Image (cartoon, rainbow, N blue to C red; front, side):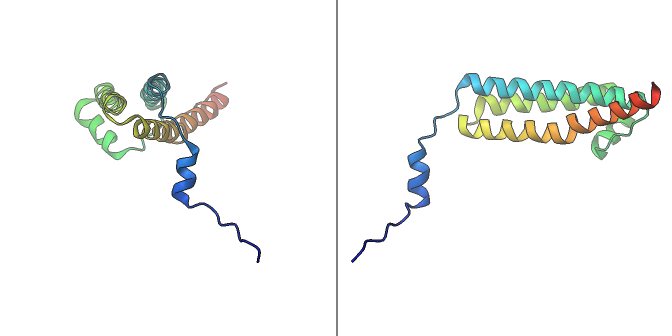
Length: 127
């Protein structure tokens, strides 16, 4: 009789990967990337509003009318940056790495890409 090979369980497979915990240096690079994306988003939003683009975030848009564009952007970006630092320092390294990677991807897709496209389109019409 021929023995049938069975696949290892999912848990055994994951344990066999022996994934190392992310280093502090790697987490710091992720934190730095996220902080740079926050700065970019704040500056791009401010400049975009100056040339006539609209803000898509209704909460941020409402705060513009209350405290002004600059102070509202500064407050929101500062709050986001502080929360990024909190994740960096307080979350377990594996969780922190996942959160910081996810947030960087979100900001690349929902801020960096769209703002760059808007500014390129704007530059093409002005030039």
